[in-house]
Image 1 (cartoon, rainbow, N blue to C red):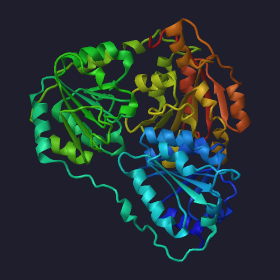
Image 2: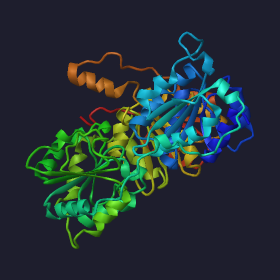
Image 3: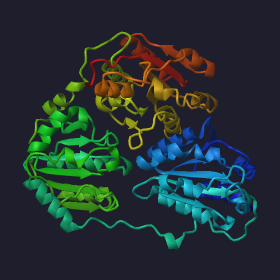
Image 4: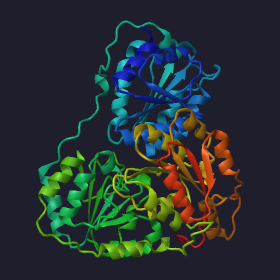
Length: 538
């Protein structure tokens, strides 16, 4: 067989059901793909393909796969792969490349892709021999999945895909690049942490994304309840502990800085689970008030995590085993030291604005309606801007709902492609994309992808005709804003031009009615929601 056929068979060995991308002149690969079980989702921009693979990887529990042609097709993947790196999403990206004898500066469409992607992936390589396709691909999937997860990029020279190969071993290992194994938790470390938790009069827990990507939410809940620890989450950890849980304080935010300072000033133990500096939560936030111990639990060792925490005890390993081990050591009858509901409500005060139930709606009205209407198995993809604050801080997840943010990179244009990736990972779940008008129009072309591939989603666009967050930052600092006003097309007419349903809502009640119709319809909708953020989150 030739290299392209071996590549497709190797992808099938890795149980890849779908690839997101755009084809170019790599005809051998697509001929091999034609008779395979793999579905190819042709997008309208490679950035969107990478966002789709990112969302798919988060939800499916295995790496999402995206594909591009060489040159500009490959470089268009960059933002999506950088997003996957900083949000710890497992992605394997494949790109066509010129023949190996043409890989030099000055050749038409040649960019050194291995070097180009090296800073924004966990591993970037060129496959120069077809007989290395299978072991290299298998290793790439291992690297993408290994903690902390992230993207891998492989360049595929045209002559490697077309050349016949005879000596190959599907899923063979690359022993010289063996991945490290995480040990089980040290019993002495578990006993020390349990002793400190029992001694603590005022412990606080900060939870990042790790419990969600490790599938350890149930273990986390048992641990929190055993020690009765008030719990904050980051944006990426939102939902790791149910947001209606009596010990959940909600998402940590600088907008509640006053209440957080009061909380951290009196606490005597901070425990982090999956703390990740890339989320922007700085340890200086909690180093106030009395002396406190810091315990960190992660999937990687402290040096691998950046070393910023300077914890008294750092324990790396399997999160299930660590949490269950600590829960088994918990004393009976522990009671919470904090009136969590009262503190939670005080933290939410900046979100309280005069309710606007008719257009322009207030963000609180929008999140209230979404909370009432979205089913308990909904997946919500959220863009970047004030809409992200509204959903991160104001929306309370229920049941099995999942919410996807672009947080580490904070890339506008994420929500709509991520919703399509979510549709492929969760074919039976209601899928909603929540965007501002700025982010929505960055990848609006993927409405056509949604229709052509029958991937129905509901896009809720919070339209304030501005780059609202940037405008707010400029006004707060300088008293005026420059370059933040936006013009918008008629969004329902634009949706109709793509073949989708579109409507502008004029009240909260109408928004509820439209969503109740759209979600079970099996169609793609664009719901235009005029909003005003005046007086909110000041």
